[in-house]
Length: 516
Image (cartoon, rainbow, N blue to C red; front, top):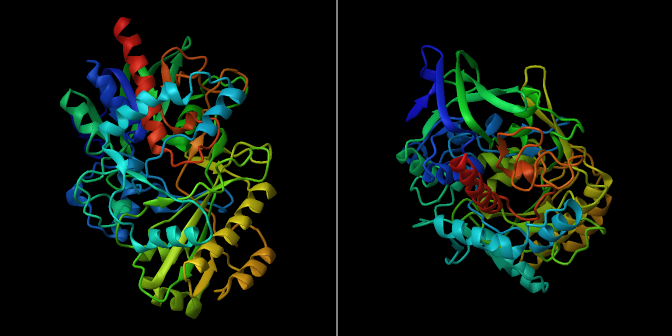
């Protein structure tokens, strides 16, 4: 039931009722639902199969082994660094466990702008409840670590409301190394929940296998051609896997799924595939405190604020969500600005460092149209994401907001992650300096861990790649179950939305397949 394609000695052919490309939030949830319905499922995963015994809480192992491009995937202009999983379980294996429902105002916008009438809070509530129960998603009940407590304290001092983050964990030991794979299996990722259940029901999993292209004939996908990778998990090997199925589910993520369709020459009369890809472009503000923070220990994310998103009109300045990232040495050192003695001085105080991040709500304004996935000469994907002046303005405002919160919480100094910035010791100094910072790619650190869109769903075939149930237009037997179907960003961390929407759409698909 489990095949490591790097060990193949000859080509392989597999058959099933459903072939699923990708094992993250969408693919993992779909595998459980479809196998539960008695359908034969074949799972294809580009990354390797790892387990708790492989997770040693070491960045030097985790990033090259569990992430796309060693946690250094970037947009075409190098302006945004993208953290994205590449292992069985996808990003659910390495994310920070934040599990938030799709905001009501996002759903309302989708209904009004894209005709997605079935996407209401009431209609989605049973599906959110179902997956929250399945994955043990509850508000974090332990006291926040100091990294998150600083956000809460500083915001409270300024009258800014914060909330507790629900997390998909069970028996969590509060270690703080979620981004390197959970060594205790407490995080209820697809790796330890839905995929094992699907395997117990007869699903087949092929890892280290890159889905190259779908073969289309007469409006249907007939087979999937998969390239076995060498043991390094990157280099194509000499053997292919051919997967034949009645139905194909694409869950390779909002970069991987559009790229697969582009490689396959999928019908795209309005050139929509890969367009309107969103990232929640993220600014980072670091600070030094008198007492130790130890931002590498404890639940990575447990406090957030929607103060600058809730009620902010879509036609006004861009809204942003405030959260806190963990600060492990390699992640901190590579994201940090400055060189030589300046860089070393900050790292010497790493145990006293804290960070806040601001996630831009992109995709709701005409000046925030997102990016486009295209193919490089070797067929691998590349995301163009030009940062508009509208988004830059939001990033600048967020740096001021975060600095104000950090000083209100008692920061000795604040350093926005911008190459022209330096540590500021008062809010007045920081505010004046941030107003003058040149907002330019590379000079300003912009991050992302949320990739959405590129196969957006909607009522109008001229502007959408998929319908409201994830069905690929112009093809009878292909569905897209991942974050690429979102027609905008979410203004919330996407994993729970992918779980719930996939569960709903996979149940409907299972019913259709069993009846046919």
